[in-house]
Length: 143
Image 1 (cartoon, rainbow, N blue to C red):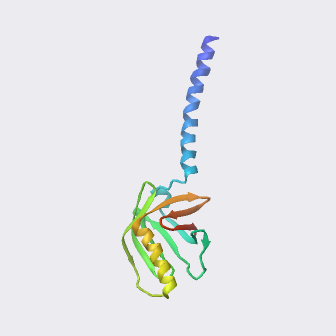
Image 2 (image 1 turned 120 degrees about the vertical axis):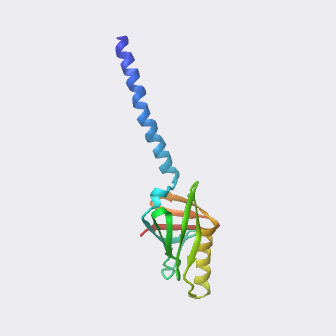
Image 3 (image 1 turned 30 degrees about the horizontal axis):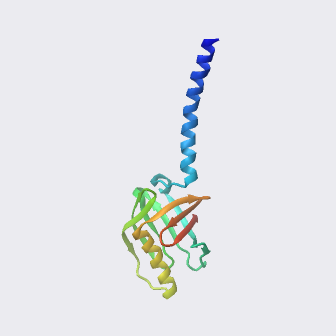
């Protein structure tokens, strides 16, 4: 009987290891932590700013490609740069863009989005949406 108890106890300990690993993985998913690998080769369409739906005419989007290069459309102009993700904060350096004006309101909107990328903003995944939190909250949906 003692041998059976030892085997059961030993197997229970071994079974606890995968459960612990699964628990840690679920913990990361529930906190919405974003990794570089999750962003690679993804495309996102902006849907809300500070909880408000954006006008269809703004049509901003963002894509991530190899080595976390970022490119997109800010509503009027195309942009591109080199992204860096550190502690779930995305910062885009060497940010370049086309230089077209589409009116004061849309130009201001573009500057807010691009400034958030330059200054750095926390990224989270929530309900299959990419949330970028800086001075403002930008919510992107998969494209």
